[in-house]
Image (cartoon, rainbow, N blue to C red; front, side, top):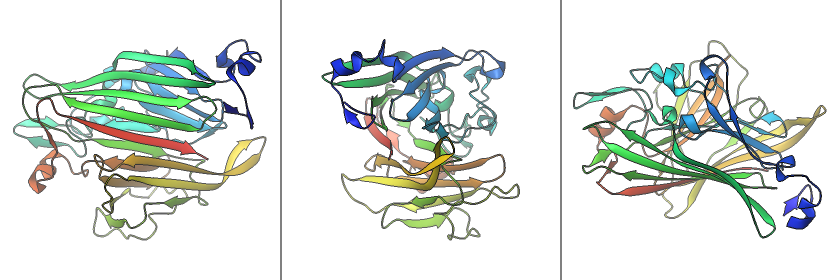
Length: 346
């Protein structure tokens, strides 16, 4: 194991600690106040600087994430609201969306509210507000490496309205600043079902300041959702502005079969400790065979000061528009798709 600048064996580490959680690992917690009461938390530390909280009651999404004590993610003013407060109609999602490093949008619908075949679909679907089952949180030695794994299952279902099942696995390793997410989405029903999937990955201060630079995939074409929005400035960050109106950009990725796409945020002055700063790079990469699209949400407003990097299989105008365009992904009965994402800090 590479840890704190040197190589250790398992027994050398065990000789130095009473239990491995002294360095890193998983801890189960429960929130107790306000509308967060009852929300369970799986708090993970890698021992190398990266820490993050996984929320089993909110789709096994990732809430706060930090490096060396400095936040990487953007947190919504809503907090980690228990899903019992969720309103799935219209824009009700906005009242209980936690922000955090990852909000999963889907599984059946994502994007703007819409009505299809007499059925109403609220903003961004229900995955972010669905409690996971069969949740596993474990750490174990494999040779001289300590592996950390969280896994579970959630389902987007309604009678006569589709049945999609997601099996999620989140992995990291002690001593490394890297986390991987592997999702398998299966149509567990017996009829074809719409499937919209968008990974709403949210970054914020102090990773994002006026000094930050955002590096997008080579060769991508950037198209603002609104025609009046200029393309310039999509790769820079701005001072908080209470009058700023959110901007959405579509990145048309070049077709590279079997390759991954990535976005990297460079922060030359990230605060680490004792008033010191250090340059860091946070890289999000994903497989483009099942996530061929990239949506960017730029919102350097005051109070809502967030950058969303959103790999997806759809745009964000909602199911009705997606179907009209002929781009709505449909999963056949028994069919499954695999999604893989990785976040690294260096």
